[in-house]
Amino acid sequence: MKTEITMPVLSDTMQTGRLTRWNKAVGETVKKGEAVAEVETDKAILDVEAFADGYLAGPLVAVDTDIPVRQAIGYIVDTQEATQASNGTIHAVQVPASALAPEDTDLHMGPPYTIERPGMLRAAVAHNMSATLDTPTFLISSRFVMAPLHTAARQVGLSLTLALTRACALTVAEDPWFNHVWTRQGLARRSRVDVGVAVDSGGGLITPVLRDAAVRPLKELAEDWRIMLGKIKRGRIYPEDYQGASFYLSNLGVFPEVERFNAIVPVGASAILAVAAAGSDGRTDFTLSCDHRVIFGADAARFLQRLGKRLEDLCWLAADERRL
Image 1 (cartoon, one colour):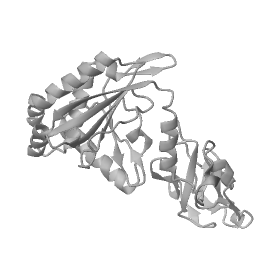
Image 2 (cartoon, rainbow, N blue to C red; image 1 turned 180 degrees about the vertical axis):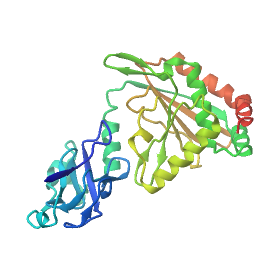
Image 3 (cartoon, one colour; image 1 turned 45 degrees about the vertical axis):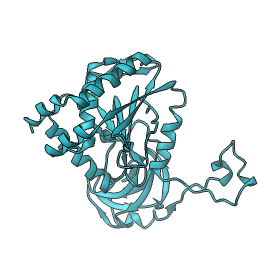
Image 4 (cartoon, rainbow, N blue to C red; image 1 turned 30 degrees about the horizontal axis):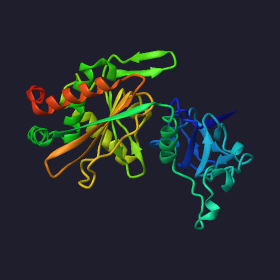
């Protein structure tokens, strides 16, 4: 009997995976549930598990090959003898450089260049950003003093990012429009506030999601955040960790040179808040990018107004402190 090892489908948007490693060689014993290979998805490197006992057999997909989901990357056979007749390697299909070159740019008129295949994460980010082109957005900004929140968060052992996430989640919960998203069927209203927080993984942008961020105890959220950052560091974050946010936060405050920036509203949300570094006056620029099909200017203004008051009056954080 010959059983296929296929490229797993790890998310609704995943179309291909990149094989990065075989943990076994052809002819070696394989146990059901054992990780026989590693694949790189748009966010992480994940294990491919065997679904049967037996022996690894070829042809095997070559390492560093992009393979469509559900396509065979190798095989498991019942006997070691059967592996002798099934060697070989499946190689990547080479894409002409002309097919990868920008269509609207005449690169040949400029400096010499080479085409590089992007990593799965960077390619996924590019695809997701392209998908936002049809979203009609507008920007609205305000400036707030962040020092009190920073001090209060430090006193209770929280990161500023986590405290700011809580403040945003509470503000979203007060205005249901910010928890809606435009769909082809109509407006989808979420039953809880899930906040995606932009993180620079080194290889690209990842947005781990803190679920039910307006209600759950900060202690639980802090532990989730610690686990998420550990997964990102190890390259082992899963689709359920970074998909499905209803609101997004991007904080570049650690870069003092960044006085203001705009963020792109991700697909599946109606708003994202961009937070820059504090200026010489001690105030920080908050820029809200909104999907105009869902949120109007007055809605966005009221959101920033509520958020600003929440950053001044930290009674909500004091209430959470008693639960830490």
